[in-house]
Length: 421
RNA sequence: GCGAACGUAGCUCAGUCGGUAGAGCCCCGGAUUGUGAUUCCGGUUGUCGCGAGUUCGAGUCUCGUCGUUCGCCCCA
Image 1 (tube, rainbow, N blue to C red):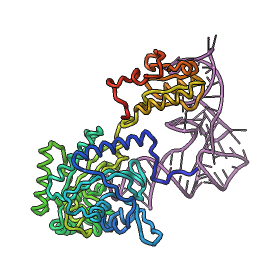
Image 2: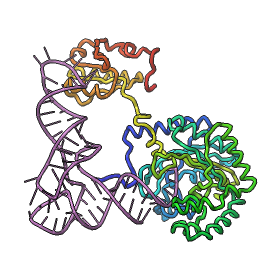
Image 3: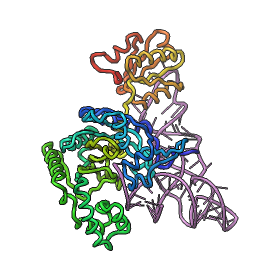
Image 4: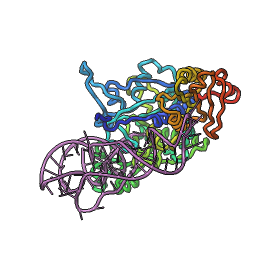
């Protein structure tokens, strides 16, 4: 039997509905802030990602699904969403249409070791905002994310962590200073961090080895070395968050994995997902648009992982409810039942028509399991006199009604609205 | 890429010292006429992940492999 590829999975209806609930809630909330959906291709030229995400990041170095196109050009399945949005922003001439707010959703692909909440094809929903430079944009985005998480019922279990990664003006001097400091204690670092020291020293800061953590805590933090502009930006952000009453925590050791981040970085974390503690993360990438060949344009964005959010939701959240009615059809009632089902559906009702046949008894069992509040029975007698037997599944009472006008009898139009208008 | 645990019915699991595979749930049928849930009766369900090896004999022991989970790494 052929199985799904490692790290990929099926979402059966209950789970697919949960993802849809999360996505639709997100799009609704984001829409209130002016974000509109953008759809970009699932694959791009490999070079787009290696330039935007950073050639020395793990994502680009060892996690991308790359393949040669038939003409020999190297393509890659997208490992994240921002690069393509920046590309689309430039390619479609939106640089003078600021602020430009877009959100995206869909699958991303990374060749990683699968774990709970971590897949090779996973799904993100995220937003990108181009133009605004000040911390007001940062604060608004975080408020929006928290409003979204509130709307899906998760806010109380999550924490907002923020940090500033500085800008080119202050990061380079800091980087040198950090390298000097860490080189002095090099022997105390783990093997991994000794390599990081040369390649990406900032990452030593969020190593989980106890020894490294101690040394990292004692090392100079960027937050103390920020240039005045970055310090003001970060101070402005925290002030705005306080005005909003949002709980936040400054994590001076937080480092983002992608090269393009600058100044504000943030994560929404949970303690309920083992090693995969981030459910949403993002930050400012003020230099990226220019690096990609566009006019200097500050920008900020984030992405949330749908699988991780879905894991945190209670069972049944977002799942479709039972049908409005179950239709049992036997003998001569089958034809009229099909017609009746269609007319009820045309009026917006969800109707589960028994297609398998079987005895009245077995059909009633199916009706019970469907969860429908009423069962409609159409057999020989009802077929003859243009009626239908209506059974209330909660109290077992039933009555015989004419099929003509059944809709108004069962669901008076003023009392309830169809579940699917 | 590294380390560890686990893979038995659709699901959750048991399976002793190596001796031809089990429970509960689910599902299906029945308990007189065309009526669900509760109850009772009956029934179906297996490549013991896959492949080698040891053995008279392997679900059980050994090796390999694939997958899942946990940790590392990284990240949403």
